[in-house]
Image 1 (tube, rainbow, N blue to C red):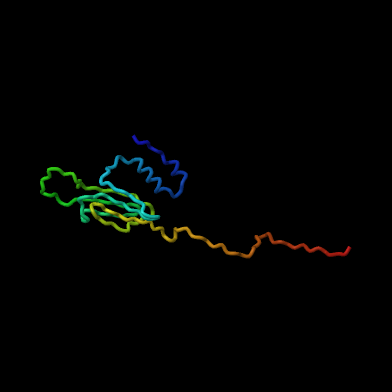
Image 2: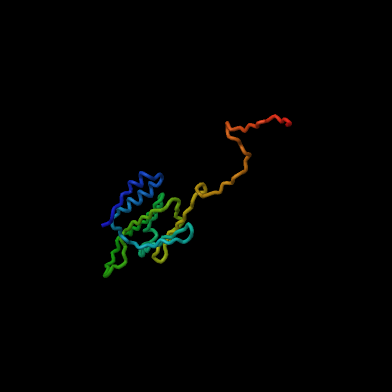
Length: 160
C-alpha cells in the first residue's frame, strides 16, 4: 500500500506552485503503470535531453508524437491484422500510450526511428525575458529627503 500525503498545508502557504503541487498530488494517486514499451531518459547537455523508446516492430507511420504544453504523448497503434499463423509471438505489437510530463519551456526538437529505437530530442529554451540579467547601477547626485533640508546657522563673528 502506498502512503498518502496531505498537500493542503502547502497549498495554503505557497503562491505560484499550484502546478507542481498538483503533479505531486496526482502521482500519489496513480495506480501501477504498465512498463511497456521500455524507455530511457538521458540528459545530454546543460539544457538538452533525449528519450529513447524500444518500439521494435513499429513503423514511423504507426507511431504518433503529440506535444502539448508541459506534456509529450507517444502513441503506438499497429495497422491491420496479419493473416499469418504464429507458432510463437515474442515481439509485442500491442497498442500503447506513454505520457511524459515536461517542465516549463521544454520543447521537442526532433524525433527519429532507427533499429527499433524511437529517439526524441528535447531542449529547454528559456525565453530571453525570463533569463537572469545584470542591472547596471549608475551614479546619481545626492538628493535630500523632503522636509529635511539642511539649514546653515550663521553666527555673529565678534572679536573678543
